Image (cartoon, rainbow, N blue to C red):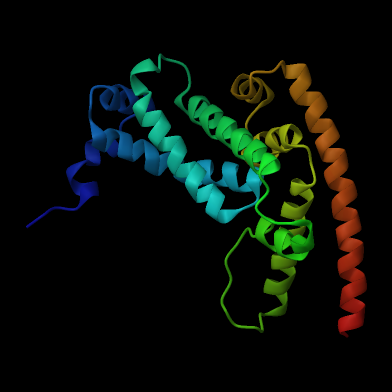
Length: 212
């Protein structure tokens, strides 16, 4: 009878990251799979928040781990987490530039584009959601739509620092920019987000009055 993956590799699951990376570099696919399990949610979140599209986020997440696996021999010390974040963020930049150059949707599809760019969570197909769930859905959509309005380099900073909770020094390393630039971009991004969200909340409040 086949044993479960976790039972066979319990020693690897409990290993520290340096040991896992070292084992993966020596060809241990199971060790690399454990690293994937540790980081896949964060990498997906990074790509989803920057690109605002679930399908693209899935593709970029897969691309990130394939790229990391193929380039493991070149990884030398340092933070594996920062290395992954650098790969995924650069991939998001490339995808963002590609879509700006070759937009999939026309200007006439503006409403559809906003819907495509804003999903954060999946909800049931029921047309009637509990009131609190509706509020949470609207709030999450508002946050993503506000993020989508930022310049992509400002978006990347605010996602790393405010959502992924990475400090200024590591964010600067990931993005390849000075800490001062991280701070200035973050301050600008937060100011713009606040303005966009205040406007969105005002619009939601007005809509709620009309629904009553």
